[in-house]
Length: 418
Image 1 (tube, rainbow, N blue to C red):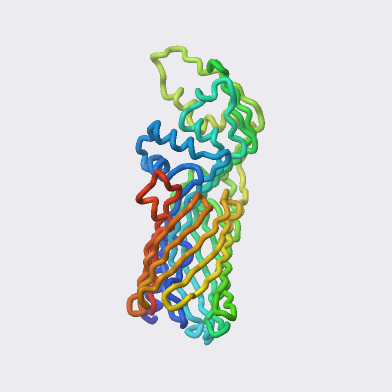
Image 2 (image 1 turned 120 degrees about the vertical axis):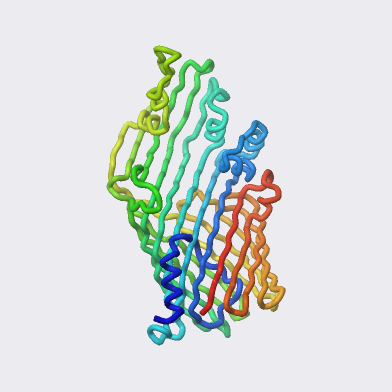
C-alpha cells in the first residue's frame, strides 16, 4: 500500500473526531491531485436577540433586567434563532490513479452535523424569561412556534469532474451520503395561547401541538436511532468574459427515525388552579417530579404513541456570481436559502484581495439568514503548494460589540496535497 493511501485510511479512521461542510477554495485548483481536506465551523444567531444575550444564556451567566429589556426592544412579532456545528474530513482521489480518467476524482469522507432552528413569538420569549405575571388579565400568544433540533453523522462518497470552459477549468460534482441518525427533537405549535386571570387565581392554556423525539433512553455519539440519505450537488459555469456562476444544493435528503421514537399530541384547553399541598413543611421529591418538563408535556398531551417517523433535512440552495477584476481582486455576489429551517433568505458579497499568490484576505457582508447585517473577515495561506489553511468568521463584529450584533461564527480549514 502506498504512503498516500495509508494517510487517507488514517484520516478516515480518526475522522469521527471532526465534522463539517464543504472546503472553501481560496486558491484555485488548476490540476487534479490527491488531497485531504478538513473543516470545522460553528454558527449561531437570531434576528431578534443580540449576541450578548445569547452568550449569557449559553454560558449560564446571569441575565439581568437590562439584558432582558434590551432584548424586548429588538424583538419582532416573528423571530428566528438558528445554530450549526459542523466538522468534516474528505479525501479527493484522482480517477487516473484508479480508472485512467484524467478529468474526474473520487471523493470520500465523513461528517458530523448538529443543527437547531427555532421560530418564536415575542410573547413566548417574554413568558419564558419573565413569567406570566406581565400578562395578567390578557393572553400570551405563542401560536406558530416551531423548534427543530437534530444531530447525526454521515459517510460520503461522490465525484468531482473537471471541464474546460472558455479557457478556464470549471468543476461540477455530486456527493451521496449515508446517515447514522443520533438525536432529534421537534415541537410544532399551530395554535397556542396562555390566559392568566387578572389576580392570578387561575390559568387557561389553549394549545394545539405536536412533539416528536428520538429514543430518549439512547443518547450520545454511539446512539443509532435512525438512518437516512442525502445528496450534495454543485456546478460551475464560466461565461465568455471569464466571469463564473456557481450553483450549490446541499443536504437534499431525509432521516427515518426508528420505532422507539416518541410522539405526543394535544388539541384542547387546559385549566390550572394551583397545586394542593397538605403539609407546607413536607415538599418532597414527588412534588418536584410532578412539575418536571416531562410530566408537564405528558400532562397536556391528549394522544401519546411510539413509532417511527421521517423528517426532510433542511436543504441549502446557494447561487453566486464571481468576477475576477485583476490578479489581486475578486468578488462574489450571491444569495442562499435554507428550506424547512425557519431561515430568512440571505444575500451576500465576498471581496477577495490577493496580497501575493500564497496569501489571500476576504471581507464578507451579508444580510438575512439567522440574523441581521453581518460583516466578516477571513485569511487564507498556501504553503509551497502542499498545504492550504484558512481561519475566519462571517460575523467578526460579534467579538467586539456583542450587544449590537446578532450572529456569531468561526470556521477553520486545512487542505493537504500529496
